[in-house]
Length: 160
Image 1 (spheres, rainbow, N blue to C red):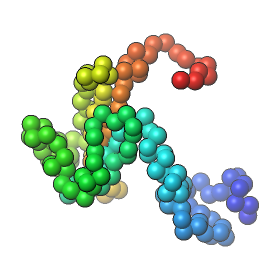
Image 2 (cartoon, helix red, strand yellow):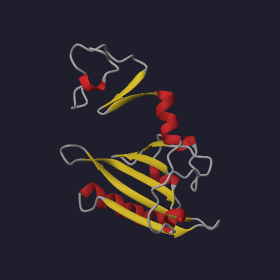
Image 3 (cartoon, rainbow, N blue to C red):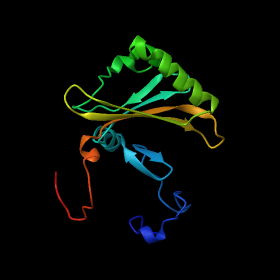
């Protein structure tokens, strides 16, 4: 089998039995693989800030962006997320996490104008495994100022 011929690839995302194993330096996911460098570049070039806390409320991951709205020091990794938020927000965050963990809710969306004129969206998503068990929370922060102003259609290639 030619590994570059996608017509011979299975559609279930698994490698065929006769294929060459993936090199160890690639991170294998159900629908593809990345090198660590590729995965880091992918996360750091998303048009959003993302953070992940696990089911025990421990900060496990965040991407880094030069234009981040919220500073996230690497020292936050491995710590309880409560020490990373202003105390005034903790009651709301506790309610959100309780609702996610209990299964009452799966998504929360907030938005606000920022001091620099940006309009930002802050979305929280409960992550669940195949059994429906809560495994953590994904936070996505994005400047939606330009998105808010879109009208009509654009089907032509336009570089920004």
